[in-house]
Image (cartoon, rainbow, N blue to C red; front, side):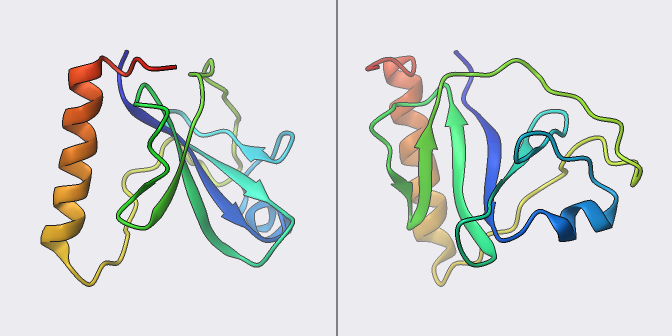
Length: 118
């Protein structure tokens, strides 16, 4: 199984995303590859990364919350903004070497277990 980030979960209302020209379906903004899932129950901001294909016991990567789910079939939407995919995500850290090390450790662990352990 391939490790991948399926959803970026962000907090806040859905309306700013719609005003940008993104189409919402059931609280999600489908974008090929990694989409955006909006949690309207709290303040705006990044909440967690939703992975598939990784060890389900991973709860965070260097303080960034992680949720592991089964892979989902691709969802598509014709966004008026013209968005087709997310190019990259920026996470701020006070220690690049620590954060890169945490990502590498989790990557190696998932590769060694074949993302099993469910």
